[in-house]
Length: 211
DNA sequence: GAGGAGATCGTCT
DNA sequence: GACGATCTCCTCT
Image 1 (tube, protein in one colour):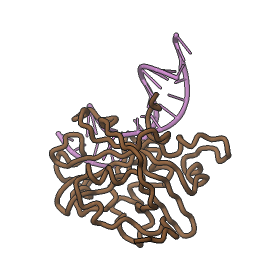
Image 2 (image 1 turned 90 degrees about the horizontal axis):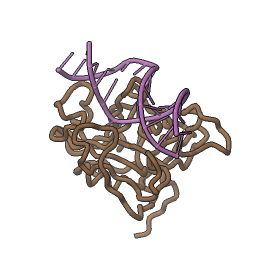
Image 3 (image 1 turned 120 degrees about the vertical axis):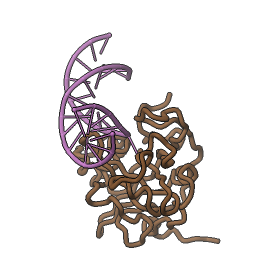
C-alpha cells in the first residue's frame, strides 16, 4: 500500500512499537528519527546508535536494584522518556519498553543531525557556521541530549507515543543497510553483553571511527 | 592522535 | 560519603 510521506516528522511511532523486548526495539529504532517540535521550530536527527537495558536481571541497568523514584519510568508503560542526570554534567535520554510493571529501556547514544542544525549548535554552545564538525553535535548520549535541549525537569516521564508530545520518534521510511552489535560503552557491570546496536559505517556513531 | 584526569551533583548506601 | 549508561581539556608523543 502506497503511503504518503508528506510530513514524516509529524507522526510518532505508536506505543505498541515499544511494547516488546528492548533488544528487538533497539534494532528497529536504528534509522528512525528523533524529533523535537516546539511551535514552528523543528529539530530532527536520525538515530544511529542505541543500547538496550533489560531490567532487574541486567546488572548494568538502573532498574537492577528495583524500583525507586528515580527510575520509576522504566517500570511504567512503554513509550515514555526516562531522563537521568549523570557525572554532575550530563543528561541522557532513554525510552521505556515492555508492558507496565516490567522494567526495560533503551539509551539513545548517537544520532545524525537532519533539521535544526544551527539550533542544535547553539544548544551545545558550539559555533554556528559552516565549518563546524557535525559529529560534535549529537555523537554521544550527553551531547545528543544537550543538542535537543533535553533535561530531567522538562522531559522525564514524557509520553513519546503521543501525537501531542513535542518529543517523539518518527519513521521517514529509511532502513538501515547493516546493523552492528557490540558490547555497551561506559559501564563496568555486565560490560561484555552484546547490547549496543549501531548502523555499520555511519560517521555519527560515538567513539573512535572504525578503521 | 592518544591517553589521562577533572568537573560536578543527584541518587542510593 | 561514594560513585556513575560522560565530555572536555590538557599534556605528551
